[in-house]
Length: 373
Image 1: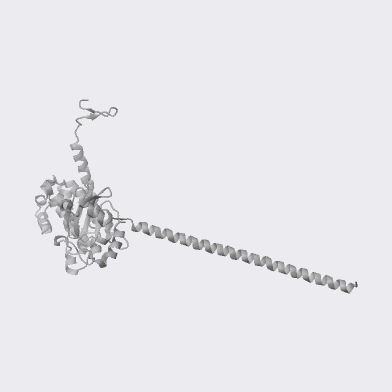
Image 2: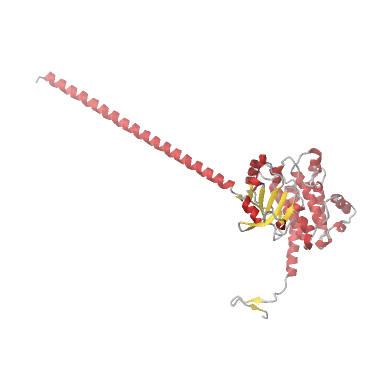
């Protein structure tokens, strides 16, 4: 074999080795590409899976939010109210009829709305979802609803309405003056909360003593919040004595409309008189320096200086023009918080004065009554 032939074979072998090396390199690169592609596919699948999981969690959260107010069936409400018997009916207002009953081991007030058009059911659902999330110590809590029947379930308020207590329905005892100070402060606190709601203020539109309720501890709570939006959002649903004169003139309702009604309620707290022409009566009494003559004598010995301050504030709230009425956050609430301190001191003194030694003693060991000890 000559040298030329050997060189040819070597060159051929060298070329084949280079080609094999290139093929191996291409194969390696192909495998790398496939690995990267698989990783991308895996990441994409994981991303899709995560997105689906988050979506499911979001939907579940929304479902839970929607159920913030419990849904009650018409059948269980009918059964609990004895087919809406007059025996369990406790009230009738501008929005609906109210029944007391027990639902799911809770004492509740069931309100059947007077008018619930079919085309407003969807709006009713939305309003329930919003209102069921509103929580404040001085607002009646919405516990649930039967939306398709225009029925609302509220916490039951043991001591009824302020209207009943002021005018001593069923011979209930009079409300002491210091409790009336407290009631005024609690109403103002609730209104301030509503007016600062987001994204827009909640205007009550129907504030009056019959819509202000008292629980078993005489904590004040405003009822019927949001019902104007549920039923006729373009209407002002209150009796004339509590209706903002500016609204009567312009048809425009504002937070100052609630301030006007609040002023009328405070005047009634002071006098226990009907609201008709009450602002004029109070203005005349103050002008003649005869405030004491129009105050409710059954409330006890009013502190004249502080009560004059409260009466003047109430009259300012009933100014004809909204812009002339005081502001809740800067004027009304601070003034009432100061008066609340006065009333709390008097309440403490009254409680202390009513305490007397016990007539018997329960032995902590034997758990028996001991009459002489």
